[in-house]
Length: 151
Ligand code: HEC
Image 1: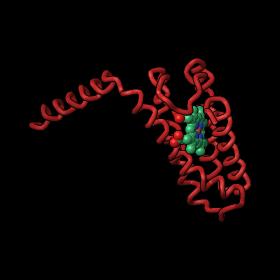
Image 2: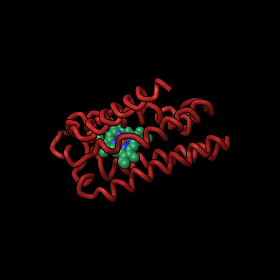
Image 3: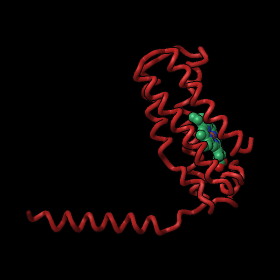
Image 4: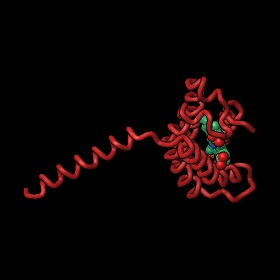
């Protein structure tokens, strides 16, 4: 029982910390670095799967299931890096990502649902379906890049 006030105080301190973090503006340059880092990781975990789907690397169901899970987590993360405050920071994001946030959001959802299909296919274990789902994820990367990334 003695620890209760301490726990409450800790919770309060944590809560206050989060609130302060939310209020303090993250520097636009940092947001850009973070969103690029997320993309780098997406490429890291998607690259081997693309190679497998194309027959350029041996098919490995364990790696596919693991990387699909990582991609799902990455998909949930940090789209907030494309905040309008980053408009003037030099990057490859096209202005339309800020001016047409709805369309950009749709592209994110397209990616997330393609990854969801890959996670499901990996669980199902049918190689042809898994390869098709990898192709679907690749298309969702590519179509977003076509519309929102400078090449
Ligand atoms: C919803 C849109 C969207 C999706 C989906 C998407 N990307 Fe991107 N990607 C971007 C944008 C926008 C940039 C430019 C980021 C910047 O420079 O501000 C980018 C940049 C990148 C970069 C360059 C990162 C750097 O260091 O500058 C890589 C690599 C990349 N994406 C890989 C991928 C891969 C692989 C996938 C799919 C598994 C993917 N992306 C899915 C929008 C997307």
